[in-house]
Image (cartoon, rainbow, N blue to C red):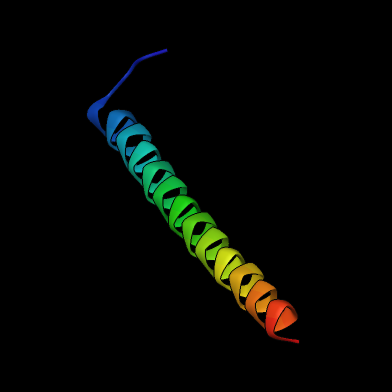
Length: 50
């Protein structure tokens, strides 16, 4: 199998896309964790006050 420049470009592009997706997922997870923590803290505070 001959590896031409077009093939490498495709591979590199795919890797770049995967990295971008992974970063996006990690950001979403982080935001979710922070939102969850705030909700738990909020609920804890309301429960304590209640």
